Length: 105
Image (cartoon, rainbow, N blue to C red; front, side, top):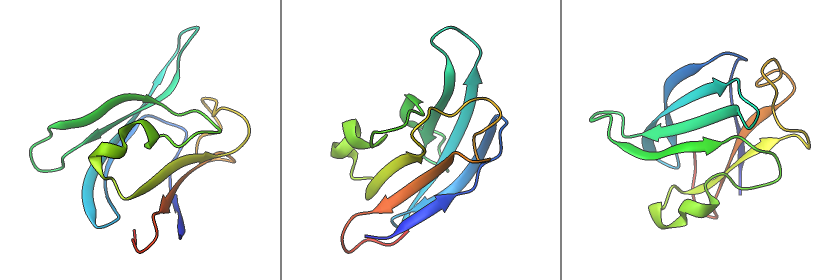
């Protein structure tokens, strides 16, 4: 297994990325509500077809875990014990992609 840091900044953003040999588009948004926080959508880059939408960026869990059937090639985790706040995402709270055995980012 290999761990890669996905560079983020503490602002809403959308970007293309290759994870485990698969091209994806990630959109990260902030919701300022009681149950809000950072949320991620994953899309096919060419067609903009949604793969997974509304994934909350929470600490302590594999964010791709519930979507194993999509074969995304690894785990996506927050590198912190605390949930990412508006000003800490990418600034002390990192998004990590951990490849499965035999995969590369």
